[in-house]
Length: 384
Length: 256
Image 1 (cartoon, rainbow over the protein chains, first blue to last red):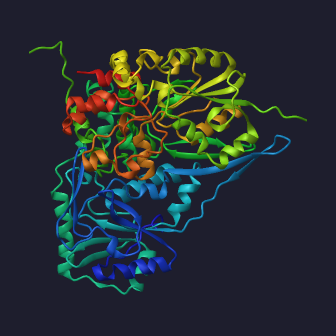
Image 2: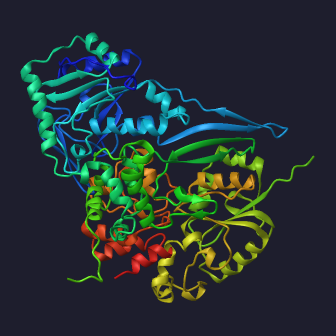
Image 3: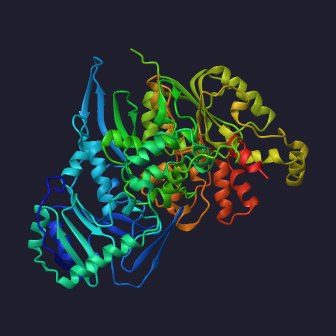
């Protein structure tokens, strides 16, 4: 749906809060499984959404490097927060997934069988601009011919995206500098902006337009449209963090020209090499594959799970771990994400969601690391 | 035609028997396992044949008595492939806390007739005494890991055991980080995966029972614990616990 070409409908509609359930009902009737934000384990997570009551009403997230807290703000809004640890990625790129099975007959001949997963099409309700941008970047990794990932593709082709523009940014948001928010630009079926009592809605696809018509939304007034703009401006202006050089190819050149910068040692001393950053990153796409034989020695299952460039297995080639220390692993992550990603996908791999900053147990800040590398290295031997 | 099945054995040393239970708790898979292998010696299951030659020997428990020391050499000599299961066999176990104390003093304080107790001054992992072919960590070890090891070895392939951090398993399971949301000092970032992120899945911190991950940064995590309000003593106790003799944890725990 949202993968298809640009759609042109410039109208603004209004979805009152009381009509969220009508929207969910429509999607359920269309055969979608709705996934939306709700509170679990003291954070906002995306899970099966049946009723608007499940949404995180009146809650706001406070994020700092290595810290995440939810607090009530007593505002009758469902989206007065920025983001949680995950959003779209686990829905389309499953953390663990069986890929194929192989069986050996009595003559020793192997037969391979695809594993197909029964799945309902997914409607993602209330996803942020950074995450939609992340999805569009993962598309490049998973859907570029000739290496199309069938498992990702099967979910992605049927996904219905209800984006939500931000009215608030956390301390760790920096999507303005990465040009991926706070307003969603592409990749959605409809986009919402929450104002008092409901949402201003814009349309991004024919399927989105069909939904608007079906649940009979009225047009938004001029005042509502102005309120929408104020919300988005508010989210943009409150961002205090920024990726240096606006996340452009300048960052690419900076990093590639500073592979011996002392900052790599500095960050390696702090980095836990635990892989939290890559796991929460909406664009990281690495996986490892394993073979699980059955006890009968006849059958075996081949599956994959999320991996990380911070593991030894990630760089294990022909009997040797190529990147056997934290310094080389962190450098691999940063120079791929912000530098060679450009060569591979013609974009940066960073969407400014700030998750790697928040969910790093020791609070390593990607923007601060790049800024430190942007400073000329201090040469101990030189004196003024 | 008679099919000769590989012979396996499970031996207990100084331990609580919990890892043998991981075997027993396999249920149906344990029955299926007996189609593929002959269990020659497994006292807790009723098979007793301590001196037999075996293809795979599973060792539970640490070396803590002179008798342990004698037995392990005999078992190694008769086993083609030797796997340690659990924290005791792999790192000396919780009982290795005696290595920091005067064992004789402890024994005298606990037993009414200390002269009847036969013991070594230290509790040490199996690898201190004989060659170990594969280590399965955990307190207790995960039954699935044991099963996977056997299944893989039956195909004549050495099992690939991941030594990544627990964090990766937490994220794959959809757990929200307790360190970041609740300021709870969690050992997950320096602990080896394999448990399925059991403790964080119920909202508590990992206490490191699977031992150190392959590239643990204990210095950085210790500093973070300190910033979270832990005293030096609390931090030492986090490291000097079930896997206190695992070199990375021992070093971190002994740091002043």
